[in-house]
Structure formats: C-alpha cells, structure tokens
Length: 312
Image (cartoon, rainbow, N blue to C red):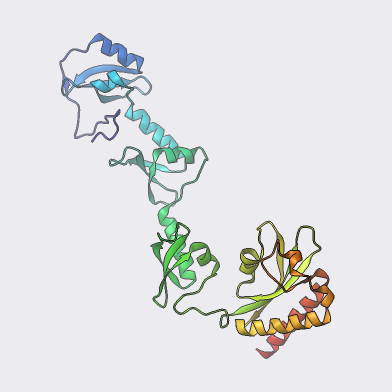
C-alpha cells in the first residue's frame, strides 16, 4: 500500500509491468528538472518508472505526481531514515505501514520502538533523547516493588507525574511517582501514621540571606525529605543535616524532642531566634536557634543516641 503521497515503493508482490506507450518530451523535461529520468511507462497510462539521479535507483510514480509536485525517491528516503536512526543510536527496522509519519526502530536495550521520523531527527541532532517505554515501565515497577507495592499503570485523573499502584495489602492508590521513589507517603488502608512509624530526631544548620547561621532541632520520619521538600521555601537555600538519631516511633520522638526544646529555651533563652527573622525562607514557626547553640544540641543528640543504644 502506498502510504506516502509522493512515494510508490515496489514490493515483490507488486512489480511494475512495462507497457509500450509513448513518453512525451515535456514529461522528460519535467522529470529532469526534478532530479529524475523516465525509463518507461508501466501498468497503465497513469504510471511510469523514474530513475533517481542522486542514488541511481528506480521507483514507480504516478504521472500526475511527476507533473504537479516533487516526487520523492523512496530509496533516498530510506537511506536518510537509516542515517538518522544510526545518529540517534537506534537501528532502523522499517516504516510503519499504518502511518507515513512513523517508523520502527530497535533501541540499544533491544526493545522495538515506534517513533515519528521528525522525533528521531531531533534525537540525532541532540535536541532530546529517546526513552524506551518498556524499560521505563520496568524501572517504575522496580521502584514500586522496593516499597512493597506493584505498579498498575497511569493515573489519568492525577496527571503525568502520578501512577496507580497496588499495595501488598491489596489496597489500590494513586501516588506521585516522586513520592514512591522517596517513600514520602502511606498506604491509606494499612499504613502507619507518624506516631507509630519509625522516626528521627535531627539537627540541621542553615545559612540564610542576610542572617548569621542558624540551627534547628526537630523530629521527622524522613529528615532529608523534611529539609528539602518541607522546610526550605527555595531549593537554592543552603541547609544540611548535621546529625540524626533513629527513634522507634514518632510518638516517642516527639516526646523526647519537646523535652529538649524545653531545656534549651530554659537554659539558652538568648539563643532562641524569633520566627519573623527566618519566616521568608523557612516554613516553620519555632525550633530555630543561633548557630552558637550547635555544640549543645549535638551533645544532646549524642547523649540520646548513647542512652538508646544502652537500652537496646
């Protein structure tokens, strides 16, 4: 089947049959002006064979295509598609017979891809990169499995950043893929809440614009996520975790943290920083101290860790 309006590739089952009909001089002139030579007429009065001056190979063309538009040599096009595929790191497998804008390629992973010719040209030019859907799906399945979930598929109502997953308990849930990667979520059916889940008491240090360094004492199930996704209003702000101590559950972590803050406020009142000073940069209302208190807080965490280890 001819899937391109200007290309008529021949197949073993569709060989042209020469016929003895005249070829007019103005046809020859038109073909020459467009980079072809008419070698004969074939099949019926509407078709002829053109030899490409660029590659020397022949193809069948409709007469009205030659006379009204620019014929395209299928052999040259095939060579360009192969070259584009090679430049893009792919192997050319052939055209898609259902859509003239698409071809089939083999990815470096060995999987078969269906891609638009223009997309492959952009990949070859370094404007973008190809992604194998099967490999991507396997990667997302592995991410889910590592968290005790299985990937079901897209979550159309949530947008491209979400997927639908099934938990080991059987519950199905739509979750942002970024959260599946970081673990910042719970199963809505059987998941632990913050009070029963393992937690940490941490000390963080910040360098905020126009302020002396600050430190924060707090607790969280995931201190790294707390720092980068919840506390900082901008990813460019300087902040890092100095120390974290694992606690068996969030309820215990909160209780221990409150006792530490009470002691710090009692014994180091001048080191407590008012919230209006750091509010433009941090999403928190308290628990921020001058950096001079850092050794004291780290000593509290060291003593806590030592005490917990002694009771294990």
